[in-house]
Amino acid sequence: MRRRDFIKSAALASAGGVVGLGISSQLSRRAVAAGRNRLGAWSSGLGQSMAQWPLIPLHAVLLGDGRLLTYGTDGNGVQTGYFIYDVWNPQAVPGQDPHLTLPNTTHTDIFCSAQIVLPQSGNVLVAGGDNWTGTSTTNTGNNNSNIFSPSDNSLTPSGNTMNRPRWYASPITLPDGRTYIQGGNGGEDHPEVRDSNGNFGLLTGVDTSGLFPLYPRNWVAPNGQVFGYADRTMYYIDPNAVQANGQIGSITLAGTMLSNGPNGWNSTDVMYAPGKILRCGGGSTTLPENQSSHAQGQNAAAVIDITGATPSYKKMASMPNYLIWANATVLADGNVVVTGGSAVDNQLNPSFNTSALLWKADTGGWTQGAQSTAGIARLYHSVALLLPDGSVLSGGGGAPGPQTNLNVESFYPPYFFTNSGAFAPRPTITSSPGLITYGQTFDVGVNSAAGIQRVTFIKTASVTHSFNFEQRFMELTFTPKAGGLSVQAPSSAALAPPGNYLLFLIDNQGVPSVAKIVPIRGS
Image 1 (cartoon, helix red, strand yellow):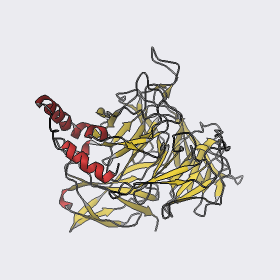
Image 2 (cartoon, one colour; image 1 turned 60 degrees about the vertical axis):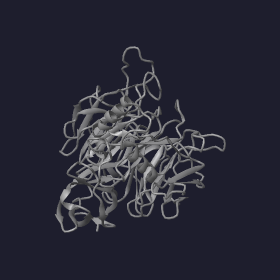
Image 3 (cartoon, helix red, strand yellow; image 1 turned 180 degrees about the vertical axis):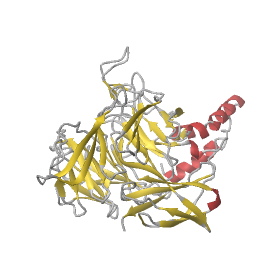
């Protein structure tokens, strides 16, 4: 299914009625359509069939040219990234296959690795992963690092290896453009940093051996350090500190989250505003009545605020559903949608979630949004991410799991629709810079500058295992000018670490433009 054809046919489907429907059915359709501006709509609710995918997309990375790199299994949905990877072009023209599925010739099993876009080149670093014996996987880490190049779609060994094997590690981009990598099986004791030349240096002064090692949640904090948590333990890490004994880096523990709040490595977490993190769902050791002995999902939600000297923690209104292995995605307008997950860890019963759970950033309240009718369980090894057109791509699940989901579907947030449920007219960005620097004032062309109310800036996605390593949202100040806007870039790399961002313009009806991908780096 091609994205261009999908949007066109979805718009036609929402315009009203299907020939041959009775009056009551037409009224029912109109009632559903009229709710789209509050609840959004799934592709299945717009008359679209499921889009097939060449593999289960355990890992998804939005590239600087708008294409999507995914990998995780073989073509049958079996655990191993040893054999293939895929590049999807949402702007493929009719008659052109939007998927380019290529052989992985690196001799590295990149299943459950750590992936991130390098800000200097736009290439993707794929660090660590599993080990393939020739007949099966071993569920152990490797210390390889490989590079995907969007210019020729190649995946090749970088020539440099990490100091530790890492399986289920987390990478983020530091303010100076280096890559910080923490955790993973085999890398429990110390994180490491990769410089722009590809060299890895161990942070010997940072002892993480007491932290839960699997996909720790990390962000660059407003103070420029790394803030994170593993299960419920919070910490700050200074990767630039030099201790008296010559060891590099330092760690400061920053408290423990409430035991009755969201927790576990199967929660889903997103920085929805500078220094503010929404955490929701995850695992629980206390099972509600009449549940099995499997890990039970939570409906708890909390906001962690790291804008002050010490982090603050506040429980929020509970989600409508109990969820484990859901995916939280920040939207073009700064609100959040939570998709997928289930009440019991990686199981269909007693229930799995097919609704889009909508969280309002200004009030902290939840709405149970549109429900997918596709019947697909997005559980363990599923992903969700924001695309430049403002929709959310939701895919995967399986390896292992109750379904082998070689498919994706799309969620269209409420801002896509008018009160009648039709697709709303959108502002159009007519020009944007190819690169911006911190503190710069830059020009953006738009078809109707007078109607623009907001400019938003969102780091492009790199997601796996219910966590988007790079996801962060911010507002940019602007003033109208002839033919467009004069926009103020973020002031520092602590607020907006270098890399690619989605630039959205939002009009006075709350409708966003299709985004332009704009890189930001230091001068």
